Length: 336
Image (tube, rainbow, N blue to C red):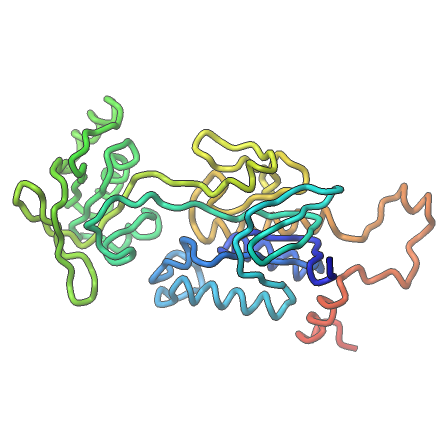
């Protein structure tokens, strides 16, 4: 295998969490690869919310492209591929995809999850169909809002939306409620309309935004937008294949620095428990990147090793990968 396929860190997934981890490991001197199949929840964003320093007019694709450009300048290497298998071999990890074959000392899994979409008719995602309450509730202050779903999460999101508007409906779409008896008593104690009939059609404006839904009983209700609450499908196959422990809902168990139950395997971002927010994912990636540096850095050398082999020779430093050292010099760091 050529040198170009040999890394200290391989990050699987090019969303905010994976890119943040790669940013830190690259700038901390470790040869890093990011393998990204493209797409993902962040790439679908039409506007960026709740990310300090980033205007709302920036799309998810623009945000991710800027991040990739930054990492490329620092020396991160990118592969556009879907990793199908990760295997531990001789203390390292062998990653395979359709066009990718590489090895790494450590693996970061940042493959996230997919929101379960309800059946059509549906408005465009980001133009009346939304999945992130904490990102998008602000958009619907004093607007008419729906919540699709029939479980506890749908009922609670509907009640939470009353903090932003007094016009909230739960759309069961022909399903019976599956929320608990306690939740049923609670939601019926709030000014939320529960609409049982299936959606038969919809209208949208010239700008693509939802305007109204038509229902099977012949009625029509106007909405600015709303939230679909049908659960998530976590892309945890690579993690479980390596033996990583998962929670009941499918997220990967990690410690406070992204370490999984398997040595050398990290997981960050939406694949792990917690809030599914870009700033949170970036922070998780940063913490994992620092933890990886603590594991992989050359210095300080272990005292037992120094006592056995002698002190570190002056010529052994610096402990940064040579191409990354050159990249750092291009930023003015290390100039004589």
